[in-house]
Image (cartoon, helix red, strand yellow):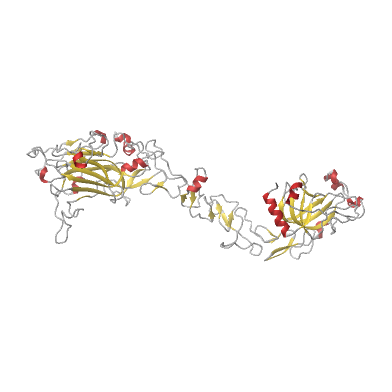
Length: 632
C-alpha cells in the first residue's frame, strides 16, 4: 500500500496530542492540492488559449460559464451535480492546468469524468514554475498508435497505459495515477524520493476526445445520490456519484466532475503543520504551503537550519528509519544571534563542529566568540557567557607602544591584559620603569648604570641593596683583592666541594688565554646550556667564590634554569693558581656568553670551557641563525 510505503501518509495515521516531530521524522496532513486554488483551461474565459474565448472588456464582459473549472474542485458532497465542461470543438485539444505558489509533494491524481474519458491524454508536471515540463504518464486506447510507446499492460514500466482510456463507462469513468509504483519509496525525503514527488505545476493535456458508443444517453430516471468507491490502496475518502443531468455527456468533448491532486506541503520531514503565507488558513480544505518547522530548521520548506543552529550540515529527515536529523546549535556563549556553517571548520574538527558565529557582540571575537577582540582583554572574574567578559585595555600612552597600522586603540594580551610596553617599562598598563631602569618617558626607560638598581626617577644608584656584599668594578680575569675575611660559612654550605676554594688564598700575576669562537659548531660541540647576550655590570668576591652581575639583553638558548631579560648572576668557577678567574669579563662591555648551568642551585656557571666574546651585530645574527637551524 502507498500509505505504508510513503511516510507522508504514515504521518496521518499516527494519533496523540504530543508532537509527532519529537525525536522523529514527521510530515503535515495531506489533502487536495487543487482545493482553494484556481484551475485554468484553454477554453476558459481569459484562459491560456484566449483564441477560444477572448478576455473580457467593459463592453464585452466574460460570459457566464455554467460549468467553470472551479466545479472540478468544489465539495463533491455539497455539490454532487456540478462539473467542468470544455468549450473547444470535438477535434480540438484541451488543457487543464493547476499552478501552485510553491513546491509541494504529490502522491497521486484521481480524475472523475462526466464525459467519456479521452482517447489520448498526457499528464505532465513542472518543478520550476512552468519553465520546463516533464511527462508523468500518457493515457491512450492504443499507446503504439498515439505515442509510439508500448503499453504498460504488456510491458510494465512503460510511460503509456491503456487502462483508463476506454470510452466506457460513458460517464463517471475514473483515471488514477500513482506517482510511486507499487513498491513505494524507502525514504520519501531522500533526494531520489523528492525528485519524484515534488512539483509546482500540474497539467492535463486532453489530446483526443471520443464519443460514447451507446446511441442514447444514460438513464436519468434515478435522482438518488450514489457512492463512488476509489481503489482501497489510495486511502481516499468516498466520492458521491453525481446526480444525472438532462444535459447529455456528448454536449462537450471533455467534461470532468472531480479533479483530485493528493499531496502535502514539502517540509523534508521536519514539520507536522503548514500555514499559508499570511500565517492563517484562508480556506478550511486548502493545503497550505509554508511549513511550521521543528528540529531547529527554518525556511518555507524547512530546507535550512535556524540562524543559531548551523554547527552541522543541514539534512533532511529519514522517512524510513524515522531519524529526524535535527540541526545542532552553535556554541557562541550568548555573544551572537546567528552562525553559519563552514566546510573548512567542519573538516578540520574531524566532522564534529563546523559552526562559525556571526557578528560577535560584547567585544568578543573568534569562531565561537570565545576570545576578546583587539583592544580588549578577558575579565578574570567573569564567566565566558557574561556580557561583560571583555574589558577595555588600559595602556599608558607614554609607556606602551602605539597600535599597529590599521588598528585602532591600544593593544593588550587578550587574557592577561598585559600591554605592549616600550623598552625598560613594566606593569600591566606599562605605567612605570622596570627594576634596573629609570627615566619613564616617550622612549621608555633607560638602563641603570649601577650594579643592581637605581632611583627610577633620577637614575642615582641605590647602595642599600648591597650593604652585605663587597662590590668591585674590576675586570674579571684580573687580580681580585685579598678578602680572606669575607669567607662565610653560608657560602661554604651551599656550594659544592669543587667551588669551595677561595681565590683569596693565592697571589701572583694574572694572565688568561683568550678563547676563540670560530663557528656555531664550537657551541654545538661543548653543548652549552645557555647562550646569551649580556652586559657585565660588576664583580663580587664572596670569599669562597666570585659572583658577576650581568644585564641579559637577549636569550639565544636556555636550559633548565629559566632565563629572561634583566639582571642575572654568573658564577666563575675556573680559578688559577695566581688567584685569577678566566675568561675575562670587563664591566660595561657587552658579551656573547655561553656556558654550563648547575640545575640543582639554578646558577649559571662560567668555566674555562665557556665562550666569552665581545658582542657584535654580525656575530649575533650568525649565531641566532645557526641555533635556529639546530646543531648537526
